[in-house]
Image 1 (cartoon, rainbow, N blue to C red):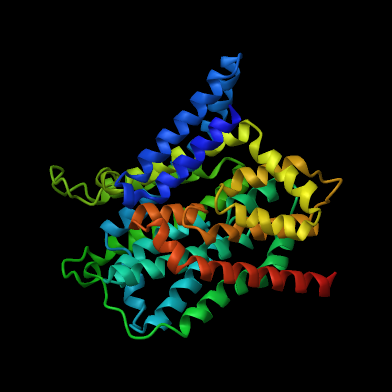
Image 2 (tube, rainbow, N blue to C red):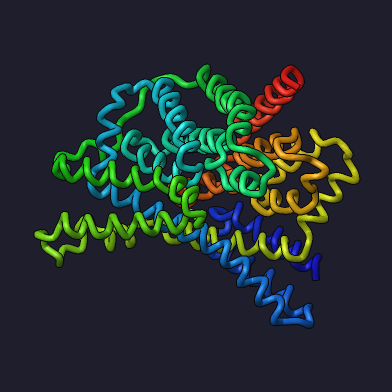
Length: 424
């Protein structure tokens, strides 16, 4: 059974990576893989009800991510429909490729710490569509933005789901993780940016969207933009105050935005199919990318409930017997297998008695799992979102971005180890 599930996952994984070669959408491959993995699991179990309960439990967690993604993408699309991003694009005057790349990556880095790497990537991809017309050039910026989003999310307790898990679980504290991981995370972005700065030349041509003459009224643009960004910033505050999951905040914000935009356009022609409303925004968002999320997370859930991830973590511990090498390996592994179940497995394997709060192990794990996923496009929520929104292919990212992500990943590790040895 276990071998069959692993083989199914591997085959599905290859089908996803070879999407453009085999001409099958990655969402279809992910959905089939997820269903087949769980089908194999339940067929070999006597207690069918238990397996169904486990699946429902996993779907509860997964649905939170999917509803959050749905709400965030709709909000960003609504801002776009009201030309809200024009407010930012008007402020960015430079057409220098190098300068623009640094500006975009720095904005992404700090925005990711306030929002989270997934939401930030959705916002930045939408923004880059306005700033850059050339597809290949835009893809490169998006790849660098994925590195920036993951690096920015690693040092904030709200910036990445794994860091949040460790924070909620009591393995780390908010102030300490910011203090310990900020500088390593900066170097995780700084090194790739420095490397590409020696190679990039020329200027960028603005996207056609930003040259439109028929912009929405300034009041509409400003209201929807600032309200939308305010809702996204409100998400971590809502979570901290109410202890409800983030998708509740994003759904509340979406409902609020829906009401306001309905009032805003109450005098408009309701028969207009392209009116800038939430209903139209929902039709425009990339639904296949949401289904891809569903399929890949369901597949990984099967590996988790069958104990494969825990066994892998135990094997690493028994074989390597060095925390630094183990965590570095887990970080790289998170580029292949989702970092959430890997961190969950680590939390279950290692107790707070063994590694107390704010121990080296937990801090380093937060960095490694937060930034290691940048090495592959499907290795992080930010990468998967970019892949779905802008059709970034697995092998293009592997060729153009992976080496930069690896350079940043190991640079951050060296800085963290050096910083830790000096301060402790």
